[in-house]
View 1 (cartoon, rainbow, N blue to C red):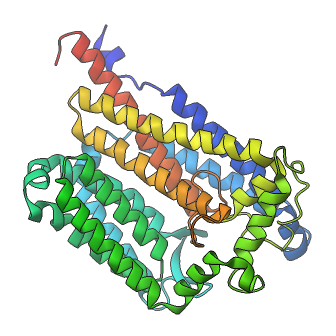
View 2 (view 1 turned 135 degrees about the vertical axis):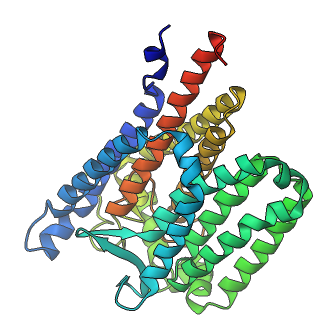
Length: 383
C-alpha cells in the first residue's frame, strides 16, 4: 500500500450515521417545537427558528470540516495555550459591557452576530488540554498526588469563573471531563475517591447556600407541591412524557410546547420528542447516544492498542462529555435529576453549542482516521 493511501483521511461511517441521525432528528424536533414561537413572537415569521437552526448546523459542519484537517499532534501542542485562551474568554465576558446577560446569567458573547456560550468552548478545550496533560504526565498522575491535583487547581479557576456567571452545570461538566480522563489514565482509586468526595461536598454546599439552586432541588423532590412556580418546568415535562405514551401524539401535534413547557426548543427538547414520538422516539435517541459513547470508547481502546495515548484520551474525553451531558439533559427532562440548563448535544437549538459539538465530533473523526493510518503502518511493519 502506498504512502498516499496511508496518509489519506479515513471516514468513520458508523460515527457519520450516528451524528447524521442526531442532527436530522434534532432539526425536526426543533422545527416542531419552535414554529409557534416565530409565528406569535416574531411577526408571524414561523420559520425563523428552523432557518436559524439550519444555519447553525451548516456553520457547525463547515467548522467540523476544518477541524478534521488539523493533525492531533497540533492539538496536543496547542492544548495549554488553548486552556489559557479559554480562561481569558471566561474573564472577558465578566467584564461589564462585554458579556451578554440573559435571564440573570452572563454566559454569552456575540461573534459576527452569533451568540456563543463561552462554557461550550471551554468544555471542548478541557478535553484537549486534559488529554495532553495525562499523555505528558501519565506517570505522575498514576504515582503522585501532586500530579493528580495540579490540573484540578487550574480547572478550579475555570470553575470559579463559571460560577460567577453563574453556570453551575458547565462547571460540573468540565470537572467530570477532567476527573474522568485522569481516572482512565490510571490514577490511584483511593486518591480519586477522596477528590470525588471533596468535590461532592463543595457542590452540595454551593447548592445549599444558593437560594435559587436550593429551590430547584426542593422543586425536583416534589414538583407538584409548587406546580405553578419552582416545580413548573418539571411538571410540564412530566405531562409531556405522560401524553406521549408508547407511540406519541404525532409529530407536530404536541401541545405542551405551546407556551406550557419553557425552553421547549432548547433545554427541554427531549420532552417535546417524548410527547410527539412517545417511548419509541425516546428509546431511539437514548440508543443513538449510547452507541455514540460506546463507539468513542471503542476508538479509544483501538488508539491505545496502536500506542497513540493522546488520541485515546481525546476519544475518552469526548465520550465522557457527550455521555454525561446527554444523561443530565435527559435526566432533567424525565424528572430523575434537578433542573439544570444543559443542552442535548447535536440536537438542541443554539448556534454556539451546535458549532462546538460538531467540532468535537470532527475531532473524533480525526482520531479514527489517524488510528486507522497507524494500524495500516503497523500491518506493513513501518512502525
